[in-house]
Amino acid sequence: MSGTSLDGVDVAAIETDGERIMAFGPTSYRAYADNERALLRQALMDARALTSRTARPGVLAEAEAFITRAHAEAVEAFLDAEGIARKAVTIVGFHGQTVLHRPGDGLTVQIGDGAALAKRLGLTVAYDFRAADVAAGGQGAPLVPIFHRALARSIERPHPIAVLNIGGVANVTWVDGGDPVACDTGPGNALIDDFMRATTGAPLDRDGDQAARGRVDEDFIARVLKHPFFDQPCPKSLDRNDFALANVGLPELSVADGAATLSALTAASVARVVARLPQAPKAWIVAGGGARNPTLMKMLSQRLAPATVETADAVGWSSQSIEAQAFAYLAMRTLGGLPITFPQTTGAPQAMSGGVIATP
Image 1 (cartoon, rainbow, N blue to C red):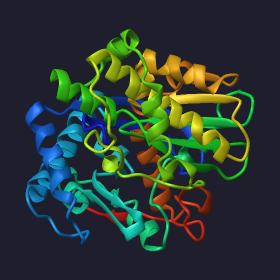
Image 2: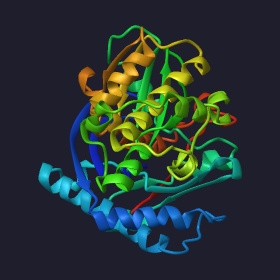
Image 3: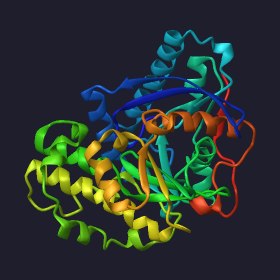
């Protein structure tokens, strides 16, 4: 999995039949170098003009070749390091890199050549998970709720449970025993990361250190939350650039105040979604990069009280690798023809299978 934060490739192995999760295997990570992240950021820029899923103008062709190669290298290094034989792997789930997500225009683009990856690895690969849902009128995101439901069955917490993934964009899955309800909540780490890069050159606000020192501009947050997206019912989804540093109107702030304000915006947008869920969650489990930010976790706890807020690691899951595990799970569901998107999670007209299978 390579997410909207553009930090690197997460790799994870799980044992599953596409319904139950029998065991979690090892995990790994391949970080992107600065020049590789720069290539992907340029790909995001070049993708803005896309009107076709297959067009690769600008650096997109180069970026697609890189994404395919980086994932191949990550999987090969992982299998070698863990001593996992190729014959022990049923299927690889390959999300690719989202460069454009405009479901309202019937367009979602994830670069990455699944057929080439299958050939290089000598393994069956499932990829292109979002396109079928979008073609049917769904949002094509979020895709992980069915995995979150499987995870939620393994813990004892008061229901309803909300599983919150904070990557570049944040998304929530509401679970209360039946079919999950899900949506994107708003900006995740992307705005904070982009602000830190623009003001300090650092790729992120590590451990929320800057945000912990800053003052929150509540007027700015109130202004952003007037955006029509936040009043839309679930399901709903975002492109990484829907709330970009260039278009949110952030006033000129110190590094600490800017980091604090953008972190608080993420927390406030999560709290805003509670009214859109069938019932207020009693327990929140936070995964993704945001779970490793103590300042953001504190802000979430304050804004989501009296519900409990815990990291995925605290309940025995993996905050870092949960999305990589999810795409392994979705790959098995794809192989078995099981649905991966639902009316309550993406707005699809019916429960739908998705993904394309490539064999070596």
